Length: 380
Length: 140
Image 1 (cartoon, one colour):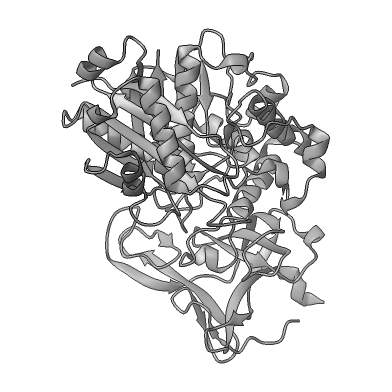
Image 2 (cartoon, helix red, strand yellow):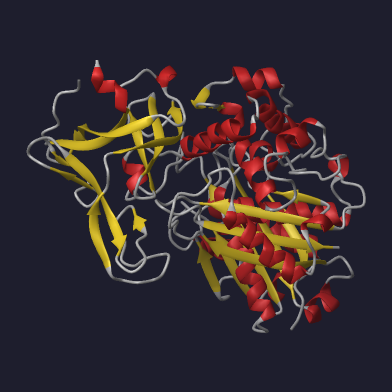
């Protein structure tokens, strides 16, 4: 079976784009990936497009804009893992031998679809009693503080770190550093979480071109980064109440990815994880086995997760700093991994990075731990 | 105390209400392995048996965690307290918290089901929903 190589990456600036829509943004990201791969776009054989709130056939609208209509295309919805799921589908099409060059696009024009707190689908029993996503993560933060003694100030160090990283990322939604005091003084959203603990409502898109061994040999000129694993799991139904401070769904998805890549968590040099809220970064990295359970806030305090630390987390700025255009997020994480692994990350470059992990988790439904979880491992 | 809730259940499949103002949350019990689920399921996630019966859950449990929600969708007036309560049947159910000040809510508190007015249906009829309140709250 062929390996899968990420050969071209592109993304728009993340932020507010009042004069564009999801297909404009997707087309810009696609053009960026094609230019980066330095290929004739006509060699692309198939496309997958991840988005959440952009309506029917958004992917077709993107391809129509860039003259590539006619390709086999699937639109993919998996909540905040939609873009990452599109990459997984693209990689499967290559591993199956069906295609040699496939593009995965993730796009979202979120500012035109929604404002304020995201909620589960209105039909869900928890949405019916007032569940919001910030509320659910706030409850997890409260429980984590109770169990492990994490302080509110420690939690604030995560947005401080991620916005510092974002200040070095020209495509990030936020370019301004913040302080712990500013986090603690920001507007309360769902106690104990405040505005700076939350990822913003962002417009943006990203695209990656993946290739088989054969196509990479022909087109990549040695610039391909191997996608060693791309795994997906959906949350299982709890048969009894389980800990909300640990993520078995993240772990099983990661474990399968580590096994496929032939590595363990100890081999990971850096990670982009789904920090939709500050507490989420804690739960993700511990669920991925990158830090001991109950220890991450102290590791952040010691600088271990900084760009020049032992195990940098979210060098791009993460969802909190770079922004969170739902469908675009998982693809943008892989864009960051590729730029870091190629040594093209500029002032936020991690020295000597060889193995990067991207993790997404999205969606909420009653009785399940999480809806959709993806882990991608890229190896230079 | 809150006036007795007299409306129809806001979600009859999940909350049973009776004319005397009492009610229960409803779920499934697997006859094969004994696991309980909220809401009602078609098959058991533990053993995959489809031999499930609908049961009424206990009305008292323990608060696992909570938050004060200060930004929500227009259907809900903020702020409100939201929590997860663990019931003796080994199910965890989310609901709003009533009957006490926000500052008095603590993880581990004993909570009970409280049937309360919960908005209106499309025709403007009052509906009854549920919240959780500290068990001590009605002893004043």
